[in-house]
Image (cartoon, one colour):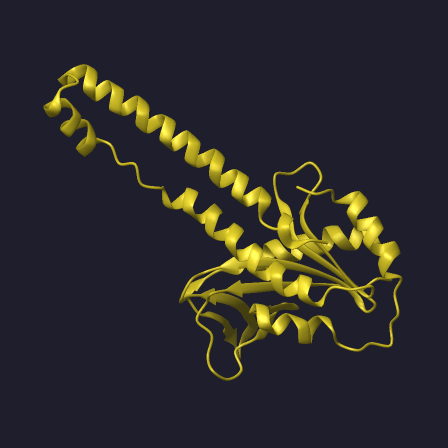
Length: 227
């Protein structure tokens, strides 16, 4: 599947939010001019009173779309008859979507692209000794366990569709993040955490399992339509 569709839904959401912001800016600017007049003084006050910059919550959608496209480029480069990639697939009865679904002869991979520029993903562990150890994910020093919870939920949805006999695993792929020169990738609660260039090695692992890739891909594409 072409990577051109990757990130489309995120870009549309960014454009929708940005259009709403610009419309609100125009309204505020008009109100200021009505109060102070449309001359040089009124225009100057309107320019100072209105902030036309992109809100952080809106900018996140654009950054997310760029991350999805970068991951898509890597996936499309290794796609073939035995490795089929589905981009930007909608979850039924939800506004959420799968960034990427990859079907191989060994199983299905649910890949969520995340773009935390310059921030380092890390595995942390708390507890132990007198209590059960808790393992989680930090990004840039802040706990981001919700990212693990989210991808686990997506894995469960895919597993329901393909059945228990088809292995389904999850990946959090961080784009443009701060990774160490050696090592770096890790797993948290069964979810692989890595960067785009590590995907080919992970997805092209040899396996004794030989699944019907076209059949499973068709099943998933029919259940999870393009967003």
